[in-house]
Length: 133
Image 1 (cartoon, one colour):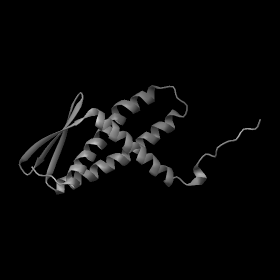
Image 2 (cartoon, helix red, strand yellow):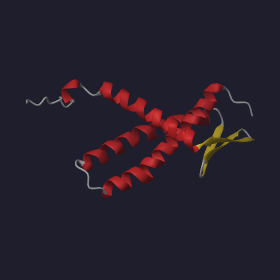
Image 3 (cartoon, helix red, strand yellow):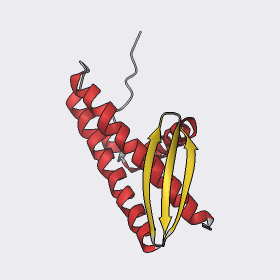
Image 4 (cartoon, one colour):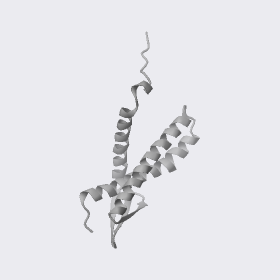
């Protein structure tokens, strides 16, 4: 199976976003709901909103892949994630190390937060308080 760079990047992004959403859903939210943290409800709402945005992106990627005739499912085996790719009868399995996936998710999240920082109007940003003395 020959995949061009754009298709390969879509498959990678699909894996990264899928793993990120699963991490939010299965790890971050349950732990946070039980934690004793100030403004916990607001943080939960923010994480759910972020999860919705990434889920929408996952749907977009899935539609793009389906238009190309590609079906994809992910298998998680401890240190390696396997992307099983079917394209019009041809099957291929790609492995990505968990450490690489975690690094890429971290970069993806940082880019997302930088983008969101630009979107928030300055009137809603909390001003820095300078203390006297």
